[in-house]
Length: 308
Image (cartoon, rainbow, N blue to C red; front, side):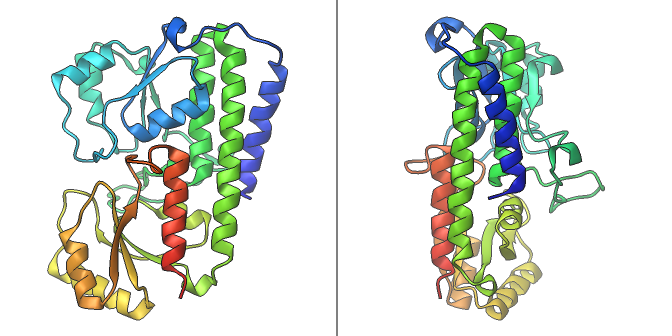
C-alpha cells in the first residue's frame, strides 16, 4: 500500500473520529448546496468526499472527452447555479474559465483540484508530455489513487468550510471514501505485483497514464498521440511501431471515449491487439460508471495484457 495514501487515510479518519456522534445535517434534498464538476470523474470523487449531503453534477457527460469538449450557453447556467465549481486545472479543463466568467463567478467559487500539491502533500508532479515550460505538469493526477485521495480531502475540507453544519455528515462520508481508495490501491498493487516487472509494459492512446504507471511500476512504451485532437506524424508512428516490436508488447490500448484509427493501423503493422478498455478523463457504462469501478476495470485490463 502507498505510504502517502496511508498517511492521508490516517488524517481523514482522525478528523472523522473528532467529529463523531450522530448528525442531523441536511441531505441533498434539503441542504441546498450545489457542486458542479467539469467532468464525471470529479463529480464521482465529490460523491466519495461528500456522500449525499449535497447536490452534485457535472458539465461534461460520461463518455465525452474533456480535452475537446465544447460547452454550450446552457452550461454557463449550470455554473451560475452552483455554490462550488470543481475543475482539475493544470490545463486540462481551462474551457471552464469562460463559463465561470459568463456566469459571473469568481476564483473564490472554484476549487482547482489538481493544482498546488507539493512536498507537504508527499506529492511530486510529472512533467506534461506537451511541456513548454518547467511548471507545466501532467494533469491526470487522479489516475493514481493517492492523487484521487488528495482530491477527496480537498473537496471535503472546502465544503465543510462553506457549510459547517454538514461537518459530521461529510467527515463520515469522506472517511468511507478514503477507505475505499485505500482498498483500491491495495488491490491494484497486489494485482501488478503478481506480474514480473519485465512484463509490466503498456502502450496507450494518449499520455494520460503516467501517474498510474509510476504508482505501480509500469513502463509506458509509447503513446499513439501526444494529446487528443492531434494526429501523430509518420515519423512518430514509425517510432512507436519500432518500440512495440522491441518491447514485446502484444496489446495496445485505446480509451472508451477515443476510438482510434491510428492504433488500429499500428496494431495491424505489429500484430498487436487493440483493446478499447481504458478510462482516463471520463467515466462510462458499468463497471466504469464510478471512479472506483473505472480504476478496477483499467487495472484488470492492463494486467491481463501483461500475462505472457
